[in-house]
Length: 342
Image 1 (spheres, rainbow, N blue to C red):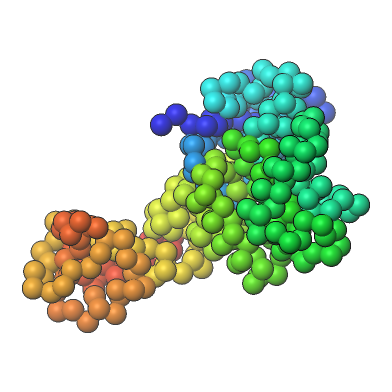
Image 2: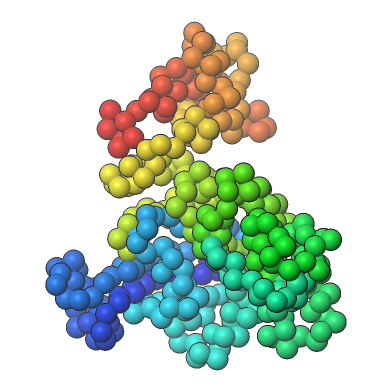
């Protein structure tokens, strides 16, 4: 499958004449080049693909470069160097006018702060990007109403933002970004300002929308629990560098370095890992015992495995044997040192 977005060796350096500094150091300035230079490497040599229909979550502590990278992908911030392809088209060669058109028609964006227009109703807030596009009034209001219903705000289309809860306001922001039917959806910590219960509800709503719409999504968060719920893949950034990309279980069980290990240390492994993540292929299972399913969470089968006298057979959704899971497999998975060292 061809990626929807390809990011190749992207840099973003802040400081006076960053392009000159970048090229003076051969397009790959090292840490020593930045020491005392007055330049800040917000994104360093970032390479990543985003595939059609996937949710890629970018994570990192404050200042890690995740928001800067996403803004580079849409050229809200100009990259200092590298290549960004959108459906094979090099965005860094697009003119400002072409980028405006791409953002208006192909990209949806939702940020932590809702930025709703206080003097407009829900319906007219949602219709605003279509108004900017020049869509006829009747058509844009019809489309806006469709999206208002999609995000569960039917009956509140005549409300003003001040009359809505925080979660409802965020739904308006989501609806507004969806009104243009974007190919790619960028979301920068959209739920972090919400109370925990509302945040959980918005995550559920987000997943419901994705199941309906199958958008290509780049989602920023600093919350690993949120990433686990939402992501197909997770990219972890540190000091402007993408240090590891993979599924949540891979990051937890095979961290690339100590930073990733520490970042994932508190993740509840029993609810994240499945039997398939920890089973032993080719082991000798107890053929007489009922098998366990490969996609079952360890949390659901741990008690049974720990009580069994012998390893239990693991089967896929078709009942075909995939391997076996033993007491030792469960203990190692749940209690090994998070840095990957015993």
